[in-house]
Amino acid sequence: MNARTVALYGNNLVMSTIGASLQNKPGLQVQRIEGLLSEIVTKLNAAPPDVILFDLADGQPQFAIPLLQSHPMVTLIGIDLAREKMLVLSGEQSRLLTEEDLMKTISPMKRDARYWP
Image 1 (spheres, rainbow, N blue to C red):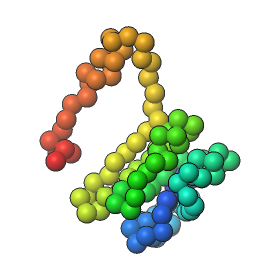
Image 2 (tube, rainbow, N blue to C red):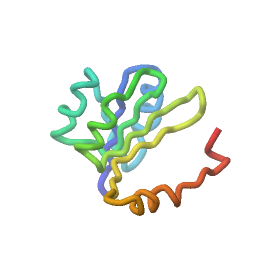
Image 3 (cartoon, rainbow, N blue to C red):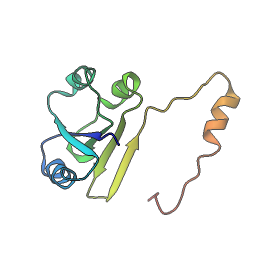
Image 4 (tube, one colour):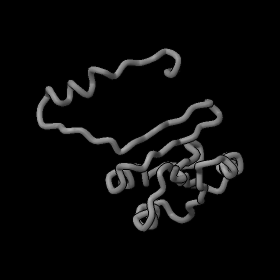
């Protein structure tokens, strides 16, 4: 089994704690991403991780959309410990040529009361 690469964006206590807890998990290779948000996409072009974790409370994830457009297989997970929630973003794309295409995507979406505030 190939190890999944999990990158942590940020150096705050939240990311340090999560990094420490994931460090010794079998099947995971943990790395840190540092630098300006505008440089993140460029830095990741060489070897994009499978997952990027970031703290939602620590700033705006402006890198999310450009990163998902250039690397749609990367999953972004925003962590919000204060609300005990995760925001999972993926680069999954679908065809949109007609109103029917849009409705096929909208229709299956249902809110589950367990997950929505």
